[in-house]
Image 1 (tube, rainbow, N blue to C red):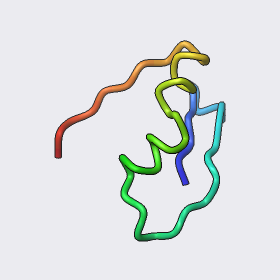
Image 2: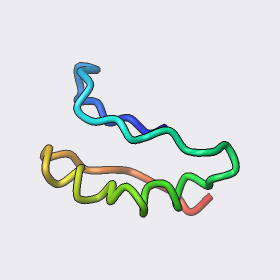
Image 3: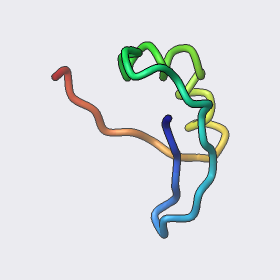
Image 4: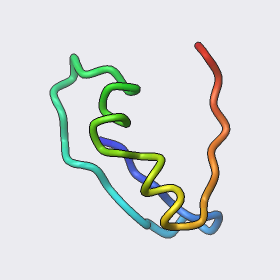
Amino acid sequence: MTALTDDRGRLLWVSAARPGRTSEITACRHDHLTAHLRATGLGAIADLG
């Protein structure tokens, strides 16, 4: 499950639950996470690890 919150910790969006074997990047791609970030005016910081 992935959740988006604002800087105050308020919940903005929650994904559906997925099997534990689903990788984070696969879940984010399936849920169109970048579209949800843009819609709420948020950005992201990530690494390649």
